[in-house]
Image 1 (cartoon, rainbow, N blue to C red):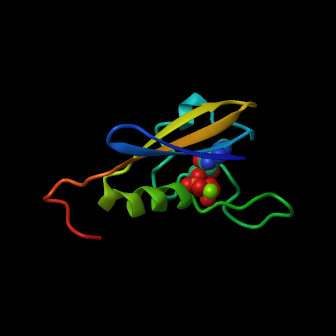
Image 2 (cartoon, protein in one colour):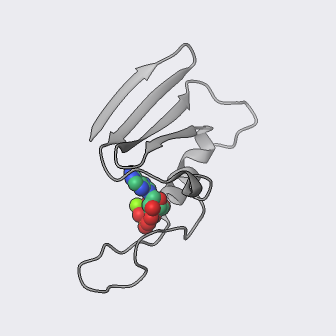
Length: 96
Ligand SMILES: Nc1ncnc2c1ncn2[C@@H]1O[C@H](COP(=O)(O)OP(=O)(O)O)[C@@H](O)[C@H]1O
Ligand SMILES: [Mg+2]
């Protein structure tokens, strides 16, 4: 995995990348939906079990900070998530 940070004029960009299985294009639009998982939903031997709440929780936790999350993924190559974290928040945003 690679973790990298950089900054633009008004954002910090936190990049988290892996060289795992990648995400098929048809799953990209569901990725952040609660309970969307491609893993087993109950324990059956050694298969990884998913809840489909991992990315959903990240989105919800980042919402108050107006963080934008971008996904860049290629099947069999890997996935990179980029969190675009604004350096200042809109005045109307409630304090988390
Ligand atoms: N880094 C990744 N590489 C490949 N697929 C991923 C990655 N992160 C998420 N996914 C896909 O998105 C789905 C939802 O992820 P997540 O919300 O973390 O739930 P869970 O891990 O419980 O399945 C996963 O089941 C998987 O299909
Ligand atoms: Mg997960």
